Length: 109
Image (tube, rainbow, N blue to C red; front, top):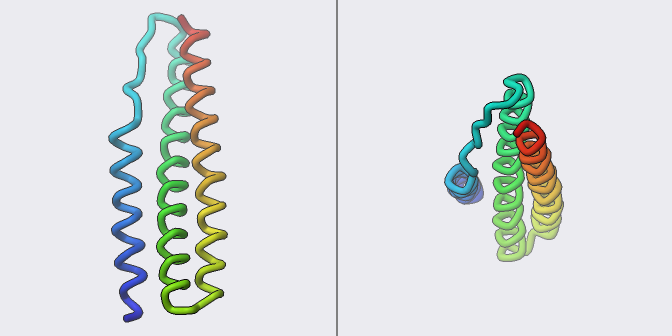
């Protein structure tokens, strides 16, 4: 029974990674400054990494919370809520990084 939360966590993290990878926009190439384009690509990659981590943390948190509530383990449910909040913050940071990347690309045109 102790393996069930880890199995659920693995499946949710895999689903989060697949979601973010499939929804990441293609990089826009421009004829401007190559250093600025490189910075935009790095920022976009960092943002994608944070969004994957955030989605994974959020899904893991939901699984922990649900499992904790189902088994009556309030501590596990509380950890799940905290993990969901941390995941939301990471996802927001990733979204900001994608916005910065888009701005850099717009400036480079």
